[in-house]
Length: 303
Image (cartoon, rainbow, N blue to C red; front, side, top):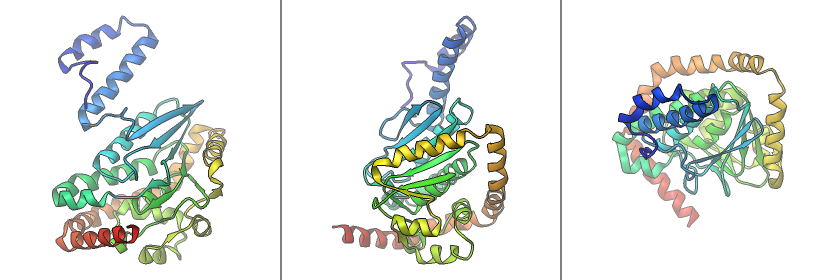
């Protein structure tokens, strides 16, 4: 919901003219509010909504607390909100990002019920938003730490693997990519993110089996970098973030780019070849039937 109590579209020219008369601090504050207002107007979401992403600041660190429903399920609005938050912090004073979930879930992946409800029309908007948030996070120039508090399944696992360092709470949940068990293919950027963290000889088995792993098993396979007791999860994530901020920012950003550009380039090149087919397969009636069957099996097991 756009906050028109702050500024209506008709008032913007007059308000901008008034900025030149403000102090530097006041002008910066006003322009920041205008930037948020403008993004909200463009994407139709409230970036300050506490039920989507809460941002906590500690020194020069920003912690994204994802609070999108019970499971941080990936839908169009959540993907757009996370992308907008990342762009907000790209050129801000923040030196590093940490993102985490709540309760026993980091992110349960794509909101399959929304997919079934919306069908092809919804997927036409959702899949581009999903690709954008994955690419934005994977290519983010500053250190990014995933503090995995619980289950990180399918797209939730990809989200975590887009970070530079992944620390997971012991006995907190499972992590993995069961997309093929659901019946859906990987967008090219999602596949490249997984390729960047899993040894090449292990990747096919991981993707084909759709196995989800307990934290200790995930550590052995490279899905996570560190395992800690639950009570120290955020403390360790902050410690690692501060360690990475001690590196020269420009040198870190360049090194990260050098590491990740081959994966991003392949995602873009392969995306041009494959992602139209990925979109078609997601939208196909047979795929929606497979998703419906997977959802039914999952709810039956949990009931």
